[in-house]
Amino acid sequence: MSSQKFSNPTGKVTVQRDLLDIEYCEDFFSEVDANGWFEYLAAKIPWERREIFIMGKKILQPRLICWYGDVEYTYSRSTLPSRKWTPQLQELKTIVEEYAQQKFNSCLLNFYRDGKDSMGYHSDDEKVLGKNPFIASLSFGGKRRFVLKHKKDKSIEKVEIELGNGSLLLMKSQTQHYWLHGIPKTQKEVKPRINLTFRWTYPK
Ligand SMILES: O=C(O)CCC(=O)C(=O)O
Ligand SMILES: [Mn+2]
Image (tube, rainbow, N blue to C red; front, side):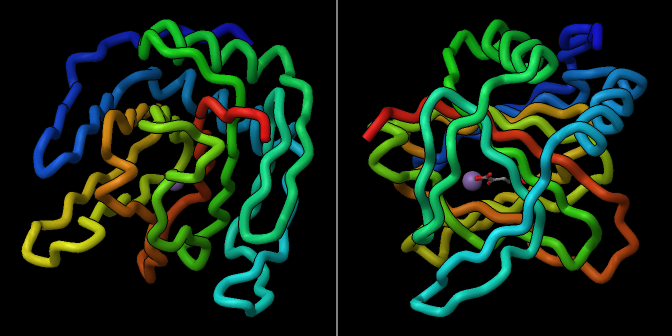
C-alpha cells in the first residue's frame, strides 16, 4: 500500500519531565492513509490470542497480538517466533525509521477489539531491548487512552495521551526505567484499534 509520509507533523508534542522523554505526533498519517492501514492490518495479520502467566496464573491475554521481526521474543513464559516482514510492514517500518532516525528489527502488533481489551501497566525494559529502549508506537483505528505513571513516586502526576488514528508516539532515553505505561479498559464505546510498537531486540 502506498502511503503518505508524516504529512503534517505540526501536532507534535514533547513531554520531558521526571526522566520521562516522549514525543507524540498526532497526525503522522492522514486519516485516509491511517484507515487504509487499519483495514490492511486487520485483514492480513495472523492475529492470535495467547495464554500468558501473570504472577504464576495462566490467563488469556485481553487483546490479539502478533510478533514480527528478525528475532524471536519471549515474555511471560510465552515465546513468539520470528516472522518475516511483509512488504507492507517493511514499508511502515522504513517510514518510522526515517522519521525517528532510529533502526528497528522487531515489532509487536496489538489488536484491541473493544473497550474490554487492554494492556496492563508495564515497561518495555527487558534485557533484550538494550539499555535505553527506543520504542516507536503507531496507532490506527479507534482512539484509546494511554497512561504513563512513575514506577515509584506516587506524587508525580500521571501523563495521559489519547492515542488517535494515524498517530505516532516515541518513548526514549530512560523512560522505560522510571515509568510504566498501559492502555486501560474502558466502558466507553470505542472502535477497534491496532497498535504497532517497533523496537530493537537483541538476540539472546
Ligand atoms: O497499545 C499501545 O499503545 C501500547 C502497546 C505497548 O505498550 C506495547 O506493545 O508494549
Ligand atoms: Mn509497552
